[in-house]
Amino acid sequence: MPEARRRPAASTRPDVERSALHRTLVSVSVTEAGRSIAHRLPFAHHHGDVAGTVRRLWADVDGFVLMLAAGAAVRIVAPLLEGKDRDPAVVCVDDAARWAVALVGGHGGANALAHQVAALLGAEAVVTTATDATRTPALDLFPGFRAEGDVAGVTAAMLAGRSPVVEVALPEWPTPASLTDGPGPERVVVTDAALATEAGVAVLHPPSLVAGVGCSTAADPAEVAALLDRALAGAGLARASVGSVATIDRRRHHPAVTSLGLEVQAFSPTELAAVAVPNPSTTVADAVGTPSVAEAAALLAAGPGASLAVAKQRSATGTVAVARRAAPAGCLSVVGLGPGGVAHRTPAAATAVRHAEVVVGYGPYLDQAGDLLTASQVVVRSPIGSEEDRARLALAHAAAGRRVALVCSGDAGVYGMASLAVELAGDELPGVRIDVVPGVTAALASAALLGAPLGHDHATISLSDLLTPWEVIERRVRAAAEADLVVALYNPRSGGRTWQLPAALDILRRYRPAATPVGLVTDATRPSQRVVHTTLAEVEPADVGMTTCVVIGATTTTTVAGRMVTPRGYRS
Image (tube, rainbow, N blue to C red; front, side, top):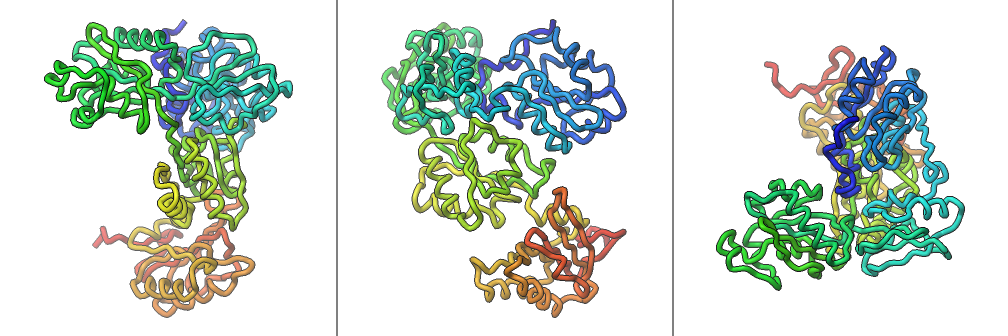
């Protein structure tokens, strides 16, 4: 049997544990066909001796993608299995890349990994978990919550069509957005209290608690962890609701802090000294410049209105305290999904969508992120033209304390929803945190397919005059033409807007030679992708649609071996 895994799943927050940015994924192949498939995946790859490789890496890897028959994979991993909260995810892919089968660790990441692999390979994900198959919210996958108690029993009732009674012991904490309150008799309790296991009762623990830790240089991590456990038990609080640990900056990387397996927040002595605490210490103040570390750090990290749930407790080399957040800190992530292909979607974008409680977006963009969505999320589809309503709805959910993803194609900050969301939040909800998650925008994806046309100064201009007067657009096109910039035209032509592109091309022809290279890229990185190389004299507007990016070269742009290139000037 392998030694215990070094990253215990039971002690980490689900949003950190399953984040694509923090996972170690490995593909293993045995045939040449399997090797070729593995090379299409963005994971570390090992070829040959599948059984030996899996045994050797089992304790150190979060997930395996095995280019292997499911039966053979079962025989390899069966002796290694310890428990679904500790085993790595295992996905099998056949040699024809038709199927990606979630074999082991469905709710530990295998289902999501199967969908990711399927999207990357153009395969079909095979997921047999009952909640996934029936689109029933999974209690252990609600973003931001940890499930304990009779999760299996309550889930079975939900699969049978019975909605549980939802009891909220923390009224300021919103329940999972997709959880429906029903007649029971099963119950779901939302609390940070430690409850005894009871048949028919599942407990959802929100990350409402922050552990403050102070320790000496010689502090023993096991001693500090045991002190925290005793403090929580004495107050009747659940370890699963401790969402982060806070300390003084000089202890940020101390093993007694990092070994707790939680997000770490660290503060300077000056910041800590400004926090009023019930148990200050002159000895601590003399030693580190603040009269409190554990209590002050916990309160500071827990945010405005926080209260101490557990006052400072001491061991030989450490102190702990626990603060309770007054309310959850909602967050809106405005996410750029990239041009369309999964391979060009960033891990940060996938993480933001996968771990959001609410996902809002224009229907086709949600389809673009379909492999990331689960029944445990609320997914709000919005029609085109309702951008302001879409942004307001996303902000309202974030203001209520939920984690929200507002998805856009390309980059959210380039003709996307980021500017509108930031504007509205600044005017109406200044306290809502907004993260803008960048993506590969159409001009960059198109340029990569054309060659290197954006190698020097360039401009992007939208030809849509729905929100911007044509006079303004015309002036910008003329300025870019006069400045001899490469120009990437967005929204160039639609069924109802056919004259704008010819008008823009006419302006550019006044300043550029007829032979200037022009590239037309439609549906970049998608299955319907089409790339056309032409010239400013020969470009045909009828070849252009709303999803086409038109790239017009500068006077220095040339064609080299069939590729558009705008030299930077490295070669004399």
